[in-house]
Length: 117
Image 1 (cartoon, rainbow, N blue to C red):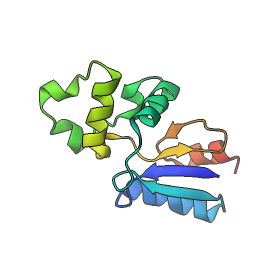
Image 2: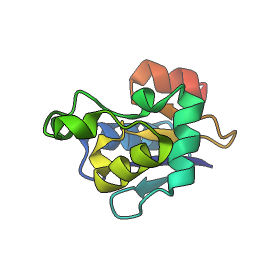
Image 3: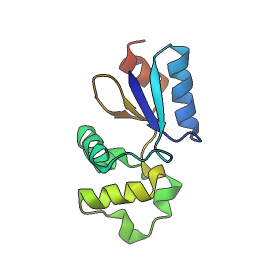
Image 4: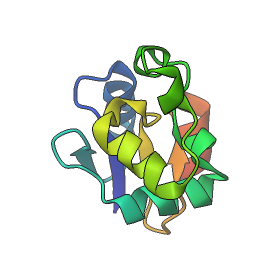
């Protein structure tokens, strides 16, 4: 089963959940503010996506409001600490299908390709 990680108040996550419902793709939704993602999982996601920059939403208000010294984490533990402290920094939604291939974001065409619909 596909797992969709995001924030329940996020419009993009709502659109992704509605799309999955409409195309009858079974999924589980995890609000990662209410159920924090373990550091090892965040690190694995970043590795699969090609680095922390692919996992972190640097165009968000949360990112823009960070102190300048917080915007340059130099190690995996610093990145995971930042994301635990500010879960809204994770791009939304994070999609993990049965095969474990991680993807981020939502678009109608992207989901059609991802789920073969």
